Image (cartoon, rainbow, N blue to C red; front, side, top):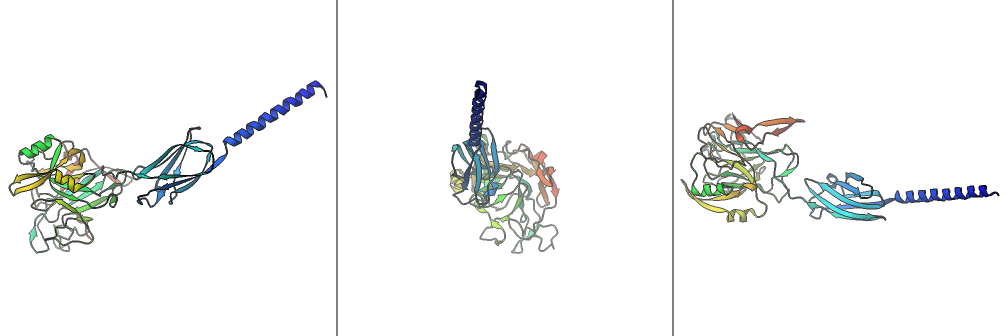
Length: 386
């Protein structure tokens, strides 16, 4: 065999070896490893894990693998050998993170979900009726303000929770000058609350989907007497009510609010609206918070407790009042820099928030923290029959 032929065979062998080595190396890089991702919520809140999305980042290639977990929280993946960051997330529920995981052999990766603190931001007062109309109560007496209600709507694009949210009205009447207590509170970015009615729940018992609303009534009953009184509202089908045990009948179909503070009149607001409504939430022991922030104020009805609520706890508010009588605003401008008025008590006038737009048949309410622009007043309360 000639020299050139031997050299040619030698070069061919080297090239074949290099090619095989390259193929072996490529096969090794592309080898798939079985990884079982097991996600768990030890609190027991998450029942269906398919609402959680996984995002697996390959540090070596810069590629992401995404998808949704199975209902059980377990998903089986095939990954290349490499270094990975694992993330599981749902912005309304919780998340789990595990960075810098070396995947070089079959493995099971266990992740524990950290639940996100439920949010109430985005809840708005979309309708408020306090002006009332004379309607008989269960004792046959006419109560001008009996059929009061408030509609609260989730005006956001994510699930919100009512648990622990409080409905309150201001201690100060905005047709009167400030007393020293109110003046001091406002200067410290606080609002004085005259009553506090709190939604029950342990944190996630009362979810509100986007655009969903609930109705809270002073009393969940039919004030229209089966439709005989055309001017009164049927509130027998509302979601929540306030039950004063000494004089109210409990509607079993409406959940009871927690009474954390009340006025002499036990209502949702005065007929002429001069005590403004707002929503707030304190994280933690609310009763301890209210006890710590209780002040005694003097009024025409004698001494009574009021509560100082910090501006940063307030979710939404609407400065209500009577035409030409709003002289000294009760809410801070950050909460509501405007006001909206009714003409008098007993007029059946309703505060209704304007609809900003309708997206895919879903109402989005106007919310600029200026009730002068955000609300309108119309005659005729809504009914919510059972």
